[in-house]
Length: 296
Image (cartoon, rainbow, N blue to C red):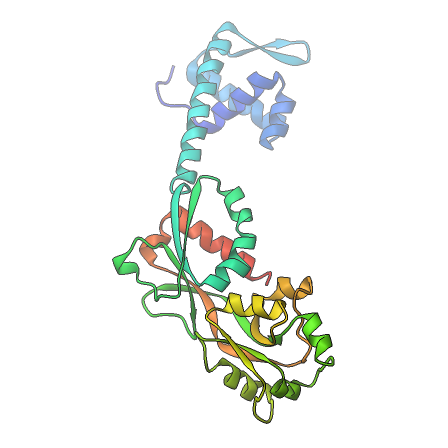
């Protein structure tokens, strides 16, 4: 009798045949032929120098020694499976800290996030909503979603989304204003300014080819989300961005009736460090968000 450890393939064939009581059933489960199963069991019996099975009609019956050995083999294979699961899921639990912009968080990420958390229920999401620049060196941030023109040196960067800027308003405001579709009509309509981007309307007018000067009353807010909400409430026309505004356009909470848009030179990027990407939960989130971004 050899004292060397039997090959795993022999043990798997024996366990399947012993559990199922059939070479054919074991072969189907392991995607092998019955003769391959029989060969591996015979090799195992030769190594152990003991009979594990005895014929029983068209099937197999474990000997007393076979029953004892099967219990030990099943326990060992279970432990191997558990160890494999632990390795695969190592790092797929615990907190995941992400810094990102408010509008991206509220209008794009959070509506999609359940598909990630349901896949990885042991990962705790820690979303830091901010407009401040990220700094991996002085914080425990794992990931930043940054709005920038190009990848940032010395970081792992993946482009997620580009944006098209459109003028939006409520349907009621549009009707009350005479249903204009010519973008030059914006010169005489109330506009909603985002004070965080005071130059945005002038930039958009130039990019969209709107002529003349804006002359109507202006309203001012200090965030993109508030500008969208103000437009939806009928206060005037605001600038918003595809694809972050797509849900509101689909439900007609707002409309974009003027038929022009402007492409921004910046895009949203996934940003992390090589060290943090070696953590399973960080790389899992990267793969998930890249997949989501390809859907728009």
